[in-house]
Image (cartoon, rainbow, N blue to C red; front, side, top):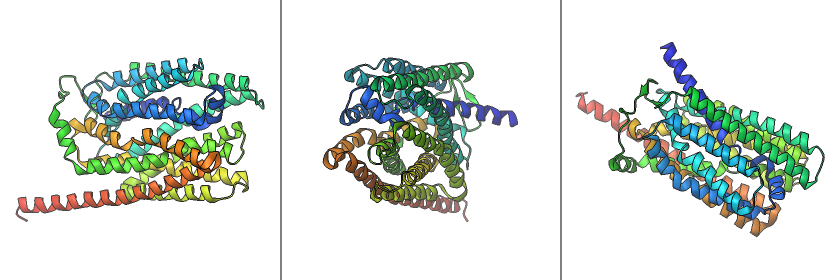
Length: 434
């Protein structure tokens, strides 16, 4: 039993390491948005267009990623994903033109969703046992945060050492290119670790044993139909849509500090690094609280908390002391990562069979991560309408409203789960003649 748990935790650790390594390079704008705009000579509207292209690639990859994860070895999928993303980073470090950057982001979208997304979530789902969903998914997101924060700390050290107090674009180029190389090399190294240490055909069942390729069931169209009949799948998709929309604000917090509050790039990088350290704290803490007090309650609390601080940040005058905004941004990050650490824990309540959980993840993700396409376009509209400063405030308030809609959806989901449990209990009593 002890050896079984050790194997289970080791596999989980490798999945966390992979998940924490693959996305920071893609979302480098979180900490270095203004620098990227200057070095690559693009506008914020063009950057939003780039992320819309990324979101479109994500969208068309989610469902196929579910089918892929039910058919192929997670080891191969994860290793390929990390290596491909790292290779794209090496190209990005050459500071190519705008069209090439769009292509690079599409390549990143392919490797971080089509070959990676459902495979890593399914592994975590199958590694959990009853009553562990909250902590495992919380630790997944929190562990990702630790990996991302460590990488971000190294990146900030490199960036600040090269840039210093210079405001010259050439120096900014040297600094950001060094950061891109660091992330790209880290990805390639982690892909090698996955290839060496993850067992092949790593399809886990509830006991953490390995299924051979002969045990993996062939895809059937009825698998999709079975998932589509599950009403809670749509509800969870809606919950993740609203929750993910709120979590997207983390990518704009750095830009808000630099544009609205007048904070210099190095300090912005420092504050956003602290925000990244909120990920392990918020994700893991929320996960354990979810197992103890109820997943729905914690998801709702996290959404409401994020909404409250987003509104507060938007309405306070910019003349307020800068440290006050640093605290607000960090608190927003804490609640955002609590949201991200818990919304997937609701998957177990959907009661989807293990053999088609990859398909379910793909369908839920198709709905839930649609903001990757619409939010960049929506934000372009807000910034065009309200200007650079007003755009951030309007976006944060809009996100807060979306978060409150998410609270309502979680309430509906929880009610549906409780109703199903009561019906199941009544059915059992009738069956056993009680």
